[in-house]
Length: 52
Image (cartoon, rainbow, N blue to C red; front, side, top):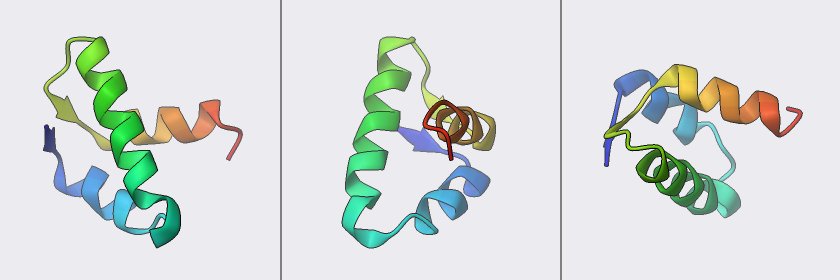
């Protein structure tokens, strides 16, 4: 799965102990929606949905 530089930067700010879970969640949901790239906007939307 391709990630934009901005999305990767945000992912790298996620605490290490949950980073792989976040990555897996983002990639699985993106594939489910037929997307091939994870963007900063997608990361922000996911964070908003989680109440963060």
